[in-house]
Image 1 (tube, rainbow, N blue to C red):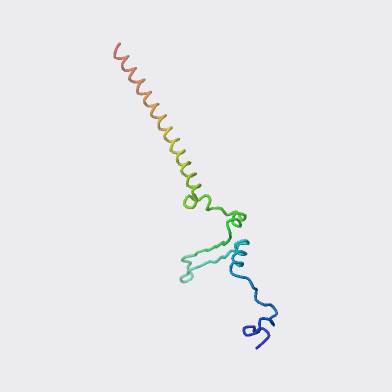
Image 2 (cartoon, rainbow, N blue to C red; image 1 turned 30 degrees about the horizontal axis):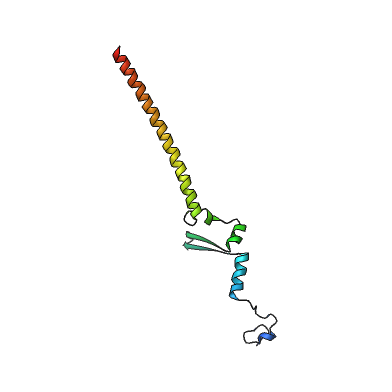
Length: 126
């Protein structure tokens, strides 16, 4: 056994004993600090790039993600009831504005038709 081969060595004699942390401690540390895993997958055929997939994975707690400026789940209507409500309110306001514009156009058209009818009636009575 060499000095670098510690597989069968006594843990008390190791220069750097293994860390005595649990999986929960490790998970808490990762979520608190955050971890980024990045990778690219490329598929080439005869030196012609057919497909490139870029993967970026950010594992963190919600608080850590917010500190990093990531909060897309708050504005996605599929994930947030508040965002869904906001989207409905915005759509409702847009539809009401469109309906008001159509009503105004219809009122203007009716007024023009009434004015034309009055002119035709008064012209025929002369």
